[in-house]
Image 1 (spheres, rainbow, N blue to C red):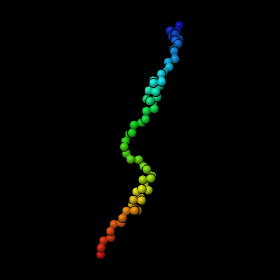
Image 2: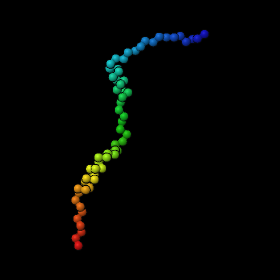
Image 3: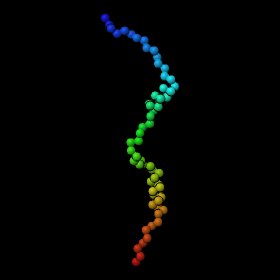
Image 4: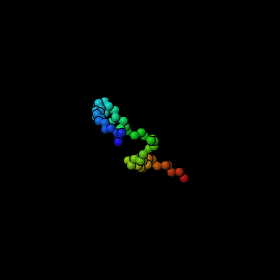
Length: 62
């Protein structure tokens, strides 16, 4: 004979504030692991322009 007896459960409805709180916990943004600089291709062009536009070193006099 089985000891298990079936039980009925009522559905629980969350209020709007509770749903907002749970959604906020689920969709929490990831924390930054490090503050290291990341590769930016546009920075290469800026660096190249700075090198090309910089004044040349003076030539030694003879």
